[in-house]
Length: 105
Image (cartoon, rainbow, N blue to C red; front, side):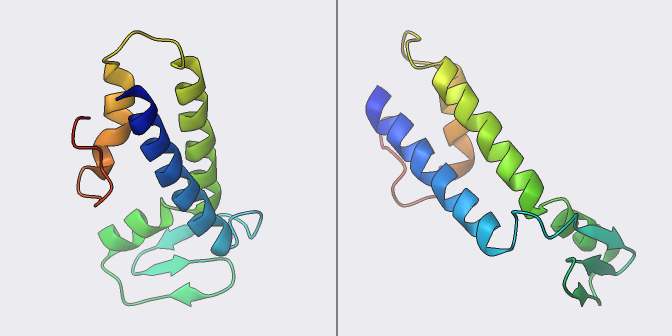
C-alpha cells in the first residue's frame, strides 16, 4: 500500500501543478474576487454569484502551486513512517472519486 498510495498522491499533485502552470500560475499575479466578478489578471469573468467568485479566486494558481509544494514536503517527511499512515491517507482522501484511487488505501 505504501508505494501505491504515494505514487497515486504524487500523480495527483503533478496534475494539479501542471494545471496551475497552464493557467499562468508562475507569475501572472493574484486572482481576486470583486462581487460578481473574478479578476484573473489577464481577463475578468463576471456574472458569477459572489460566493462562487470568491471560491474561484481562492484557487489562484500561485496558491495551488504553494499547496502542492507543501503536500510534497508532507510526503517527504512521511517516507519512513510506519503504515498505515493516517496523514498520507488524509492527503489522498480528496481524490477518492478518481478512477486510479488505490482500492486498499
